[in-house]
Length: 444
Image (cartoon, rainbow, N blue to C red; front, side, top):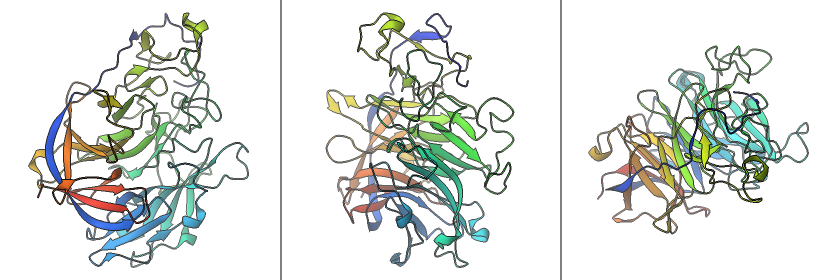
């Protein structure tokens, strides 16, 4: 599983390389009802359990707003805008927000943001990945930035593939999505590890010993051990074996958004490279294929003419693709995979993981997993829904969103679910004041 090398083409469990995609059909029309506006890029929204009328909305530029029955409050719940690194890419900034399961009693909340590069990091790295704990005031209306306790501080080699989502699982542990730290699109180079796949120059996601990139982490924020500001749960898959114990699952490129379903399954939207987007149901110790595969298509970042006799400069489209690592661990297929191009037109660009719709306000969506894409054709995101199936990939439908009866015309950044199971879509036009949160409702 670790940095083992030496896999050769005669190694077992290679399969013909052919992409498998979800079938896509037209779905029902749904309404989007605006509930909060006048932000810039809202990327996360959470709800205190004891007062679901309160919405805490994180904007990518470092401010968490409080929205309640009186609207968007001028005084922020949390402001770390002066602690952000200079935003070298659209994928940097304030990226994740979570409330402790006992927030009502302990006031603890958690933020994930991009900070300036630390003095002990390599000079050619980009910035620092931060996950911090903060304490809210007794009335839970604001946070003192001075209460910050940094849990994770990791140097990022590149400005992109930063993921960002953080969430508490039903087990009470904090799950942290970490992208592969790419500084380009080949998934290798500066800050990337060697790995077992002979057709790659290396790349984070397959290595589990050198760094934490390209993974979902699982940590215990209520305890400390081994000199760290957190503990590692004893049942994490690499505890007692080779590998960094914080790993829960790996083989991910840019797991931007994630959520737990009502049955405890962890849904992760992993943003693709140039051809496919995917949703994974992530399990303990699972390997989800990057950077060996994008979707189910085998890829390579090595100009590997010497490896299999291809012409110099030719990448991808290999005849065969491994279905397991050199140690025999299965590469797990996504439950949903869809293309960037469909019928000769742009169909998707970056998957936005969503939530299972648990409310009965829209019967056609009840029990379905609702997700989206940042940008479909034109200047609007797309909304999708899928139902769990025993066969992969699952089929998906494209929803037809409207706002006041008119077509939806914004980019999709994230989703949220309130304590009643209703879903919200966080959107923007990438312009100041254009950020809007919508509730998913039956069409008007």
